[in-house]
Length: 212
Image 1 (spheres, helix red, strand yellow):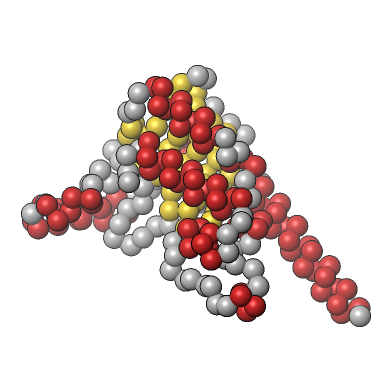
Image 2: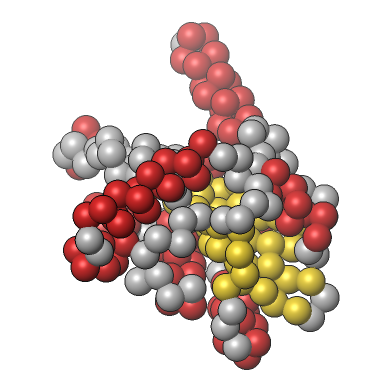
């Protein structure tokens, strides 16, 4: 009986610790670009993914400074949607450049650029994104990764599903939300509001940044 009580106390303590870490400032390996955004904007959201070898990850940035809403991209300018239409020699040049990008710090270098859309559309994206209350969203650190009760429901695990990361930047803090394979798990065990919200935000960013 005492052992069970002790186990419950330990588990409760771990759950509270995870929630506190998720809600606190992200302090691990913050890219210099994010710190620059913290100093140069009132608030910003950065949507990105797990780093993949040989392929630079795009950072989709939506920022607000007073009434000015601006979009930025950090990453390779190489559009892979038309890769089959590029001669091999030139394609190899772009791929070599992508390897170089991966070796750089994510900073205010040549791969950080503004993404122009008409101001009305930029404000529209901000309004739609904020409607999901990203600063109040629960991520995997709070709700848990994957599906609950896997042994009961069947093995719904996936080990190479990628992740979505959403960094929430204000003058005071930089927070990170982390969702592992959200599209996969949303189909296998639907219902989590945070997971559904990040997928909607990702969809919005791809539409307005023209990255579908």
